[in-house]
Length: 179
Image (tube, rainbow, N blue to C red; front, side, top):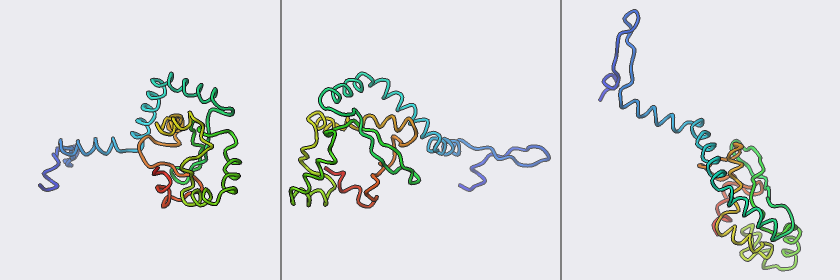
């Protein structure tokens, strides 16, 4: 099929041929429109609003459980690097004790095995800083539920690569996310 046969020409003003898209080109146009950044952003907004509104009772229940089972804030905000190397605060339910960073320093200084494990993977397999509800939230990935607020704000997208932590580079980000 030639380029000319894909277009239907009609005479316009002064005898110029005006190409009109055929049915085949219409499908490609629709695919391009659905893959545009504007369409993706519209999908993100609609999907995030639906999830946040339909799951509002679950969201409130989880927030209440986190607040009642351990002292400290309900949410944990971690600085992440997003599209075009923009920094933003990624919102999650808090799954660790309130002073987790200080406890990590004490744990790593007291045990060479824990230090080696943390330096290799940037995490501890049996981390004593994780709360009981935090274990459940991490196992079910419900700790990431508040990230739909980030999607609504435009910091993240529902579909696409994960934003990475500031301390890790994209080449090594997959290793510590596996377990």
